[in-house]
Image 1 (cartoon, rainbow, N blue to C red):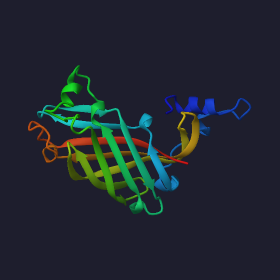
Image 2: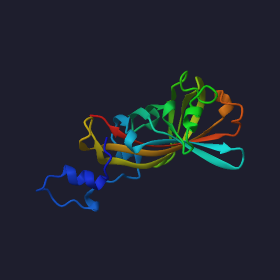
Image 3: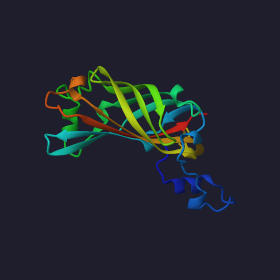
Image 4: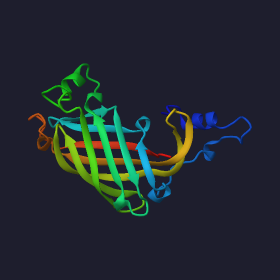
Length: 211
């Protein structure tokens, strides 16, 4: 995984005799999903985040981030409806600024991470509405309960860009970066009875095409 800035990656990847690297010479994402070639893509956890926005008794919204995510995308830009997606989140990777609260949330009274260690989304429908907007529908499994879910998806960028290979070395590959948002009914998934308001799930994800 690449954890340096894209400029540092470009400088590291370029030999000393190569042309000068400038911000303008670094490939950037295009505002059109057609810019990413067809193929099998893998989610890059170093450039991805899953957040749950949970209403706090009608006073505020608590934000929780999950640090361990994975996913595979079979991408077909000529016919997005033929694309396939599977993604997983490790429940034990939840993060909160309240000391000790993550352990409580993953316990049997809340997310029950021991019995249900992962949440999973499997897409069965891709619907493009424009070069940068669309909907992805499928089945969301949380707490062992599988329910339909539809994400509103915004393309952040697609096309050639810097990422890392399996050994973490800088490489240019086709990338797809998106922001996705949905709301779930916590009671439909068997969550604690105190969770009654819809919970918003937001995903920022970058997928890299595999060779």
